[in-house]
Amino acid sequence: MENTGLKILLHASTWFAPFLVPFILFLVVNDEEIKKLSIQAVLFQLVMAALLTVSFFLVFILIGIPMLIIFGIMAFVVPIIGIVKAITGDSFNYPIVGSWIK
Picture 1 (cartoon, one colour):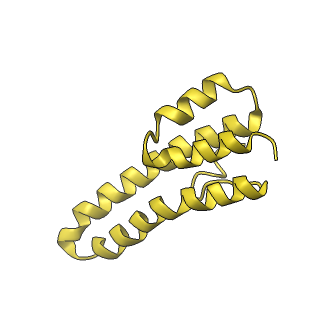
Picture 2 (picture 1 turned 30 degrees about the vertical axis):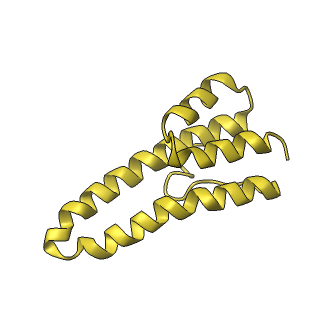
């Protein structure tokens, strides 16, 4: 369980500094796993923002309401799963963007 505290901080930063904390950790920490998770966290936030924006505009067509609910829940729950995985020492990749970074 190396860098458990940094992983928890990285996942929890989604609620107070979703871009700043991963960017700083990417620049400061030399651990490859933290760097990979930092990039994934930023990409995940960007993708979620894009999906929520598209869903918001699709609300007017009524198809966006379920998408808005699903992506909103996903943006809240995925960091919690990351925190739990970091506490238990398990490996974690963000959904959607996890396979983009190797």
